[in-house]
Image 1 (cartoon, helix red, strand yellow):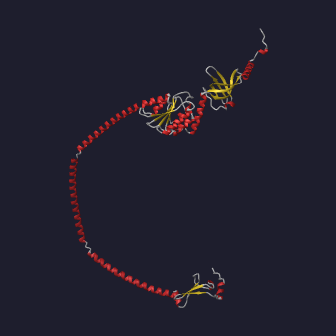
Image 2 (cartoon, rainbow, N blue to C red):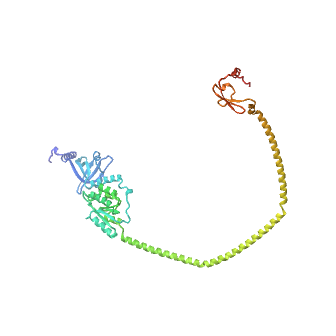
Image 3 (cartoon, rainbow, N blue to C red):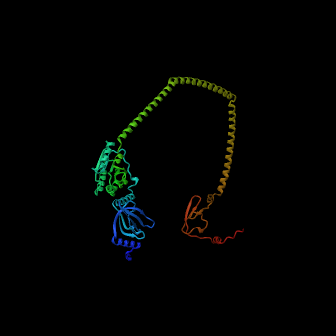
Amino acid sequence: MSQFPSSAIFTVSRLNQTVRQLLEMEMGQIWLSGEISNLSQPSSGHWYFTLKDERAQVRCAMFRTSNRKVTFRPQNGQQVLIRASITLYEPRGDYQLLAESMQPAGDGLLQQQFEQLKQRLAAEGLFDQQFKQVLPSPAKQVGVITSASGAALHDILQVLQRRDPSLPVIVYPTSVQGAEAPLQIVRAIELANQRDECDVLIVGRGGGSLEDLWSFNDERVAHAIFASRIPIVSAVGHETDVTIADFVGDLRAPTPSAAAELVSRNQLELLRQIQSQHQRLEMAMDYYLAQRNRDFTRLHHRLQQQHPQLRLARQQAQVVKLRQRLDDAMQQQLRQTSRRSERLQQRLMQQQPQTRIHRAQQRLQQLSYQMQSVVERQLNQNKQKLGIACSRLEGVSPLATLARGYNVTTAPDGKVLKNVAQISPGETLKTRLQDGWVESQVTTLAPNQNAVKKRRKPSSPTPK
């Protein structure tokens, strides 16, 4: 048995370590595109997933420090482009990629931009239901904003011709794909609003990839649809295709053909409805006429039973009967009144008032004489009392005192002058005499000393 040199024999650990070093030194960092599958996001914050294509797959890991920089949330089935370094996980001998950056690839990038724009426009309120306009019913003239050579226009015109041939259609041709398409769509919407010749607009195109439909995910188109005074039906792609225009539009149609059906009336259906209403009207009219005929027959029968001549004859007989009852009642009332008048006259004759009147007149004369005597006596007594009172009043009247030579002098303040302390030299006094007034001016005051002393002497206390 041949012997191998010890340096040529590898352990498993050494082999995996050597391979890892070779991979890391030789390959370095690479860019890799593929589809995400088996995505795992444990609580540690690291991401573990498999990147695959049609024929192969490779394990990948993206640590928390790196995946924090990712601007989107990866999903299984999403195509991505990653920058990673190749390494080998020594415990299991599996080689894997350590991703350092990640971004959507192809449609994935467009889908990310779509979601970001959708969130921003939703926050601005462009999708709010309160701003949605009601479609006219029925539409008088329809405007179509789409490619003049596309299949969508052909489908729309064909449906309108089949359903409502009399409905006028105005086409605003525009590009629906390419860099210039969004601006042309915006100009077409603005032109339709300026001309104001349609009461509803269909904006759309046929189906295609996300990139083909991208013109209808443009923010300028969204604002133009939102600002339109004319209601807009969004009809972009197929039923599975969703664009920003579908959210902003007043109504979303799954296809351009469906949009044409939404804004038009079905002529055949209208004819069927008219025929149905006509039949219902005929049935209702027949029922109404039959009901009126039955009413007429019933009323005619009642009229025959209650003919006006018969009613008049019965009423005349009733009048005669009532007149007879009235005459009888009047005669009875007159007889009762006559008997009552006779009884009252007899009572009046039995109670003649002349005697009572004579007695009352005599009584009245007596009372009049007595009242006159009492009044005269009372007047004499009051006259005597008045004379006595006048004599007494004359005795205490100040005028009588003035007639005897006395007078009353008042100070300037109007008070009666009783002592010299009330006035001062130079003041004017007013004196009342019997026959008039005298005004005088004070020149000198000469008070009585005894009187002054008496006033200054304190009064003795009053015994209790």
